[in-house]
Image (tube, rainbow, N blue to C red):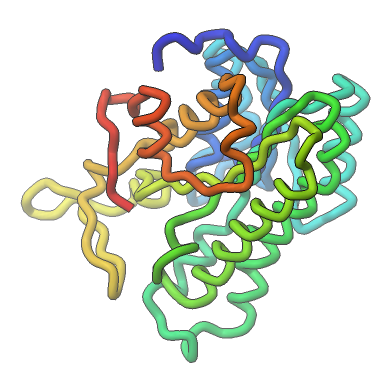
Length: 282
């Protein structure tokens, strides 16, 4: 993305769930813009999927920002509180909070299933990490964000407005967008902006495990939703560019309380994905 390099010098950001996937892409773009980025997640050592908080932080350093890895289980309120106390001690403010953490491998077990085949534990998994975790992080971060006229970005989904994946997923994303609207209501006149961000199909490390077919294309089929060519998907850094655009927009408060597709923000702020495209599949 042209024209943003180092515009976030001196800014402090937290990206939850940034060992890999969308969170990592967002953390890298904030770092490339010069921010100090606290990278949180449970992954301290590489497992079945690549990526750790330390590896993401190191890549942020390479891009010109400052990466701070923090191993944090976002189901543990004490650990989350300690994270923001650390930021209070080290900086006294927070400019950007990106609530992204989500248990994608667990959620993948229930894709395309009717509600009577999705057990109550799936509800708990989806709401604990994906709604409650975002509320908890915002709760502890709010005083620091208010001190900086900051920005909260909740990573949500078009599943908030139409059927996607299963009933639990849709209800959780709808709840998250309602949380965005209500937090924005509470934060009115504080200078803090709160938005939901809707990425499309993102070529994360999990989806990169999908093998190519005989025609050389990597296609993922979501039951009841359709098939998607992953070579046409967004890179994880595309939503990151949306976050940077919001963070550097002096008029972003006009957007508070609302949800935005990444592609629509790309049109509004004139940025592209890393390959120059504006992917639009969701």
